[in-house]
Length: 194
View 1 (cartoon, rainbow, N blue to C red):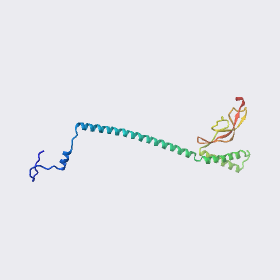
View 2 (tube, one colour):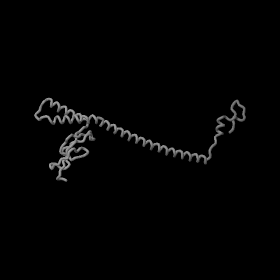
View 3 (cartoon, one colour):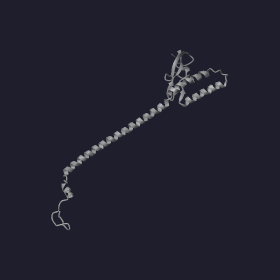
View 4 (cartoon, rainbow, N blue to C red):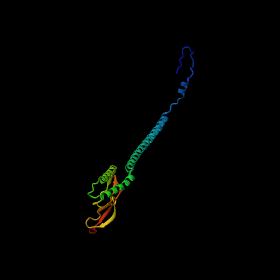
């Protein structure tokens, strides 16, 4: 590099600036060093890609786990809401049984307004229970099912098929799809079919 004297300065050797010193301090790596550095950087990039893929898979798993957790808790919440009144409904069923017994014993020719009021109250109670999802279990004339019925009496009879429900001592109920009280029933025991 030739030094050109600046106007107003005597010609001679120019002093190095800091920038010049820095430029001189830079060492240029050889091709082998560059190839090694490139190989190292490619390995680091591959490791980072693997790590990124692993983190992405973990994130997807976590997202799926959370979605499953949310669905499970929503299902549990819906079930709890659906059956939260189960104790109260069970108590009301005994009141409904009392209404049934009282109305079964009303003489057929009784048209007293008081009796009609009791019938209206009984229908209203049934309507409230029906709105909550309470439905009676059909028993009489059905085959005995231990999931729905509780056999209290086995009667010898030839008038009905074996294991058919021939009488209901207490009506059973279900709340939505769950049995909350099985029917107490009389079951036919037909000796001809044994």
